[in-house]
Image 1 (cartoon, rainbow, N blue to C red):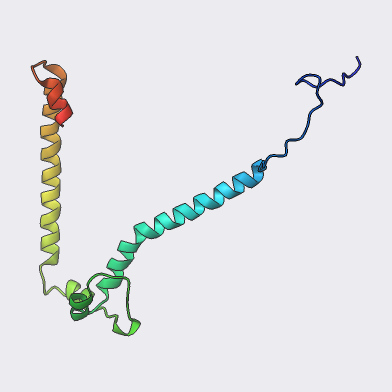
Image 2 (image 1 turned 45 degrees about the vertical axis):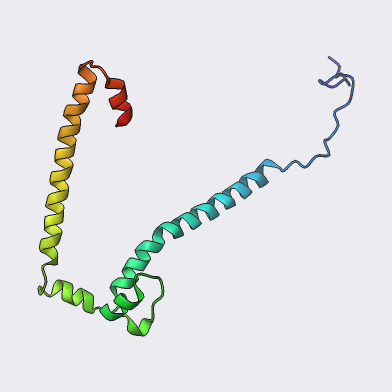
Length: 137
């Protein structure tokens, strides 16, 4: 069987396009670089508040009141006196923390309990204004 000199597109021979076509491996590399750059910036945005909190925890109380939360710090002014005061037992921080945990657990359990009963009511019963109430929630 002889090869035909006619291309699939018709009688015209296949011609290379002169438009800007970026090869697949280059497009993939550019996309990867852009994604990594995007996620590095996103991580920096999300980590900045946590870094600020950690740096602020090592500031003296008077600097904390005057400067507030920020990313500026002076290595000479960093101190662990806040942690010493926290773990020395001269405060009620852990009692406050325990109270917060208890309130959070109770609030979550009560919210789930009430939401389950309300969801059951919406699922089983038909009443006037049901659709409007569902859209409101």
